[in-house]
Amino acid sequence: MASLDEIRATRLAKLKLLQDKGLNPYPVSARMDVTLREATEGFPKLLKKKELYLVGRVMALRGQGGLVFADLFDGTGKFQALLKKDEIGDELFDLWSTTVDIGDFVEVAGTLFLTKRNEKTLQVKKWRMLSKSLRPLPEKWHGLTDVEERFRKRYLDTLMNEEVRNRFILRSRIISALRASLDKEGFLEVETSMLQSLAGGASAEPFTTHHNALDINLNLRIAPELDLKKLLIGGYPKIYEIGRSFRNEGIDVTHNPEFTTIEWYEAYSDAERERAFIEKMFRALVKQVKGEMTITFDGATVDFEKPFSVLTYFEALQRYALIPTPEKATLDELSLKAKQLGVSVAPSDSAQKIMDSIFKKAVRPKLLQPTYVISYPKGMIPLAKEEEKGGGIDAFQFYAGGLELIKAFSELNDPIEQARRFNTEEGNRKVGDKEAQPNDKDFVEALEYGMPPAGGVGMGIERLMMLLSDVKNIREVIFFPTLRPKSE
Image (cartoon, rainbow, N blue to C red; front, side, top):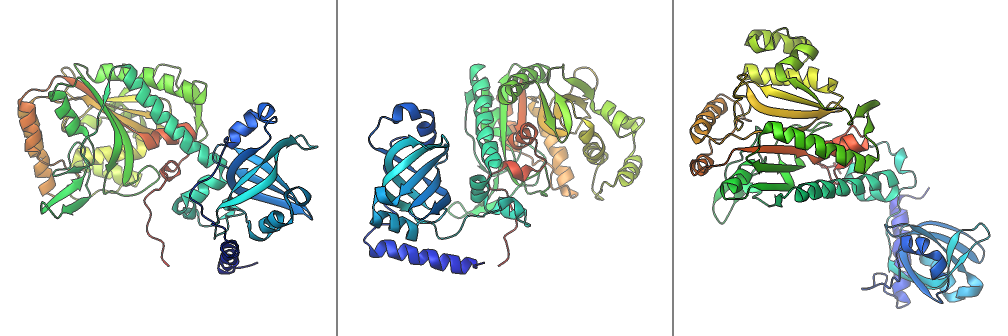
């Protein structure tokens, strides 16, 4: 078997042969009368055309003697082309035979016909090279032992694997459907800053960079929340943003440092109203995408037709983590429970942080059916209002398939209370909590001008995609996931 260097050298020789004949292997323009999908779907009508131009990448070659069949692919579909030496002429036929490889892009012109096997085919009268490929496409892509190579060379993964290609088409359609749902409800799509002097709106460690002209450090945003709330203050009652956020955290099957979220904020709403809206939205989305109300994820059936379950945070810990009275559990008791479950605990971790780590390990994987977890402990979500009854935080997270999909709450709009909570977070940061939220005095000042009561929702697009496409690794639903550079 020839080495990659030998194959590349052979293709470079074919490139030179084209150039020596005065042909440009990378011309500026191409002629395309219809896409390959249109050629397939409109075949009966196009049969009447005396000349039809098609373009595409050569994905397969089959030939013997004076006949060559080529399978072309243009991103919309596949189509077969036939070159017959006695029809196209010796010069063009021989040029094809000596210069065209699988992976090349070509322009072909001719007439349509049906083969004896009833295959729709273009009989080529003339052809032209559009882009000469210098490296061979993988023949057995699924046989690669280095799984990460699929993520490093996603362009080959999507080219050779129709299931992967369709998954990313599905991702685009899901985002369009979410956008359409919010637009229909009167929400306004906005864009807010990616570079921020303080990275707030969530509990996470940011990526930091330096701006030379201003000579200041800036952070890639960890969430758009605070900017979006400023727009509520500015008189926009219903807003949303679809965009990237960045968190300098570990990488695992549900976390990537760069990810996409959709966040929306509705003035005069609250957590309870947003739960009703999400239930309605999810049912419509699942029906539209999957065609039915039940899906399969990781071997489990997830039913979106039944009313979504509701559990308090402490009820969930009691039921699934087997903590008898989690609301009264001490730091030592929680540390012991964490150790039993194999959950790592840092010396600076608070009782609430340990409890949340236990929740993620013992509770979250068991929330297979659509479930709202509500009523979080005080201090756990610094940007959310407290419940008027119950003593917890008026917040919820939405789970399905064991995945955390949504975090939402009634937004805190009391500037004095917000300042107090930021001060508490600042204290946590000083004792080693890198994920504690910064004391954003500019946001507190904005609140002092008055923010309407509001409900806010944040949803991760990648985890939603994992659920709806039944994949267990977040890197499968990100075109170019973050990876360690491959050593030479």
